[in-house]
Structure formats: C-alpha cells, structure tokens
Image: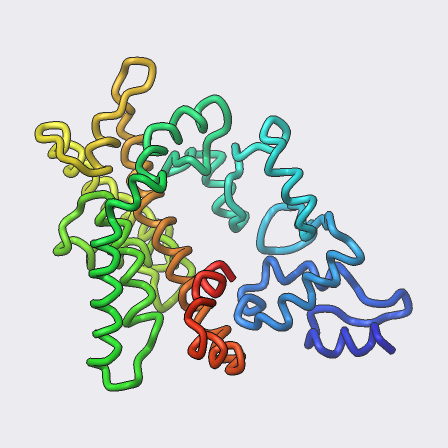
Length: 309
C-alpha cells in the first residue's frame, strides 16, 4: 500500500509493478526538465532513490550519455573530498549528447574553475580567493545596503504587486557581483541579458536562439566585452576584481585569453544566477508556509537562520 501511494504521488515518474516501485523511473527526474518545476514530486522521487538506490546509474535515455546520480549527503561529501578520483574534466557539466559530442570534437568554449582539476584548479582559484574573504566583503557592506534599499523601494513603487524574480531577485545579486568586478552600472543590463542567454540556452523565454550558432554568438559577445575590459584594466589598473584577473600571472606569465575571459564569465554568471534562484526560492517557500512567514515577521532575530535555510 505504501509503495502504491508513493507511486501515485509521483504522478508517473515512478510506477508500481510486481517488483515494487521502479527506481529507474524515479531517476528520470534528473533528465526531465518539467520535473524541476514541481518541488514536491522531485523531492519525493529523490527520497526514493536515497532509500533504494543512492548511487544510481542513469544509462538508457535519449537526452544524455550515462551518469551516476548521487543522492545521499554523506556520499556527496565523500566525493567532494576525493578530487584525486572524481574529476571535473573532461565532462564538467551534464548536457545533451550532441553537446558532449561537440565538446569532444571541438573542445570547450570556456575554461573556468569548474572545468579544472588539480593542480590548475587550486592555483587559479587562489588568484581571487582574497577578494571573497570576510574582511574584503565587509568593504562592500555599504554598497550592498544601498542596493538592498533600492530594491525594497522598487517593490514599494510597484504598488504592492510584482514579479519578484524578474523585478528584484535577478537584479540585486548581479549588481553585487558586478560591483565587486568593478563594472559600471550602465553595463549591468547587458550582463543580465548575456547571463540569461548563456544559462537559459534551452529556455525559449531566455535563449537568443535554439541553434548552436546562437550559443556561440553569446559566448563571442562575452569574449568581446571582457576582452575589451582586460585591455582597459591592463592599461589602467584600478582597485577592483577585474584588475586582479586582468593582471594575474601563472608561473610568471600572464593568463591566456581563454582563462582570463573564462574567469570573468564564471564570476559574473555563477555568482549571480545561483543566488537569484535561491532568493526567489526562499521567498516562494515562505509564501507556501505562511506560518513560517508570520514567525519571521514577528521575530526578526530569526532572519539569519532564515537566510541560511
């Protein structure tokens, strides 16, 4: 009975047969875009995998080449500490078969920290590590407070109703990251568009186009913009992270253009995209659980814990 109820609640992602719940169907949450739009069903399927197949091979499918889905926290931590065994290269991200084929034939369009293994990863990460220490980030508290007030005021201006993701969540973290890089505010809308086009290449609402040529054009725009920025910061260094990257050296030699521009891209995109999704998801969770929202409103000392959650 319990297995049948779970299968029904998953709406077809798993099914009950004579052998019980089918974990292979549960594993399809990782390669089914619509699955990510339903948190409850996604987490129920993931819980089933943790119980029945915590190291689960996802093999026969039309989307991508085989990979293992790791769903237990302890296993993930173990993998994270074994970077001599579990490598980023040559397949740093999960993608469609056609994308993996292109990578093997043509190489990666970018070479960021997520593409690197030791010893390069540690060496390249050290270039900017100091900028993300608490002592350095404290210098930005005034700027972050200014941006926070701006977007609270923006919600007031919108009259009590807004698209929180579009009007607030995607802007605030991007402005913080680009402030660290030292980019002018006039360039922020351009960076937002490029970021959404890069991360939303498969999303009809965000993509520049569905063809590979469109994705290449987005990457080319990144290279053009950051190439000009690198030249400017090498000619006239300033007190910002862009100058640190532009003038960085490895083994006594300036970084190659690919590594330099890839460094800008990973900071400008990953630092923004993940945080905006977290902000939006956090608000969505509070809206779905009004008792927790009421608790927070009644006791603002809970705010640090709410942010961590």
